[in-house]
Image (cartoon, rainbow, N blue to C red; front, side, top):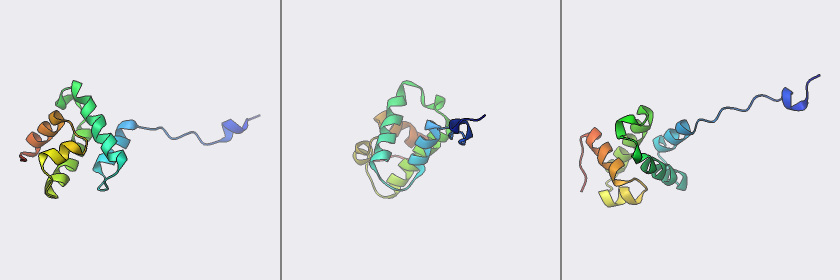
Length: 98
């Protein structure tokens, strides 16, 4: 005989990296997005090339959007990114910012 717990659908697996990437890819600014940027900044003990490629793409997309909207370096850093992450993303994008 099955218990009630066994009859329930299995819980969806939560992938924190996918959630982090989705947050960075989103166009809305929120506290969750700032926290995601700070999380990426905390990952700088790993070399940039060792971060998952989807995460690097999400960071580049987010920083690119901020540059396109006219934000400067200080504003991007204030938004939550670390200087090392910003520098690497700018290098990948082939862009510079004042």
